[in-house]
Every structure is written in structure tokens, then in C-alpha cells.
Length: 191
Image (tube, rainbow, N blue to C red; front, top):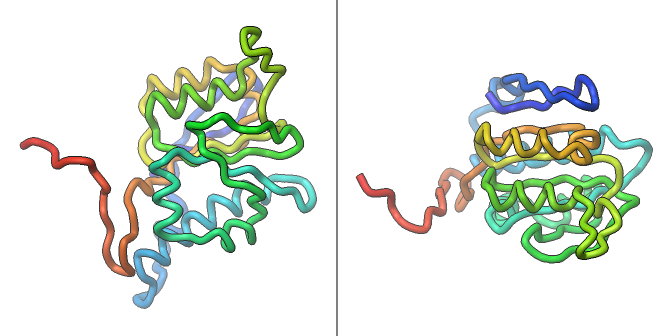
């Protein structure tokens, strides 16, 4: 099942594997692959925004691959329905939204994890005065997060104390049609 972050204390992170209810329940024969992916992404957004007090909005930060996954299955209107105020590119310089929570949906790779950590690390050289976002962060990875990258996240104390959810959503593919998907690999692996 997906990796789930379970907050126990500010200085420790534990992991638990669970099978989500939506992945085991029968959705009926009429639900397409695109519908299933759209439902999964909606659940990610709903699970995150439901943990915020009141009618709060959230910043969605994505890398290029997760943007393609989102674009292939869910539209901007659906994102706004789930209180996403803006979609930002993790690979570019971003404006601070210190009054809003942040939801990262990224590939589990070195570059993405390093950029997430940089968002929460003060930097005297650039005069960065603290985190770019509010006191709540949600981390979702398109695939399996390697142990060494998980250890890097655990080492960033400013991030760890703000993380509410850390989860692998296993959506590292594009839904091209209702019943077709594509792994979007640059080249075929050699056999």
C-alpha cells in the first residue's frame, strides 16, 4: 500500500503502510481509469484541505511530471473546487504565501526533494527569511519514495514539524483515454 506519514512527536517520523479504502472498494464496472485517477487526486486534495481550519485555501506545488499527471486527468476548475488558490512550479522561483498551507505533489527524486527542503531552510546568502508557506505542509509523491530521500526529509526539522501528511499516491502515469494509460518514459528500458 501507499506510504503514510504518522506524526508522533515533533522530532520523529514513523511510517506505516496502509491500503486505502478507495483502492480496495469496488467502484463499479462503469468507472473509467481516468475517473479513478481523478477520484484519487480529489481524495489527495480533500484529505489535505479537510485538515485546515475553516475555509482555508492551499498552494499546490508540482514538478513537471506531476503537472502532466494532473493535466491528463483533472482540470483547474476541479482544483479550485478543492480550495487550491494557485498552482506553482517547484523548479522555478516562487513567491511566498506565508498565510497558506502548501501541498507538494512531486516525483520521488533527488531534485524534487532537495527543492522541497530548500523551501523550508533559511538561507543567509539569499536573505531568505524563513519558509515560503504557512505552518502546514502536505507531501505527496507520485511513486515510491526511496529510503535515502525519506531520511533527507526527516533531517529537515523545519519541514518535519509542519508536515501533516506524507504519502505515496502511486500515480506515476498519464491517463491518455478513459481506459488507457502511458508511463511517459523518455526511452524504452534496455532488456
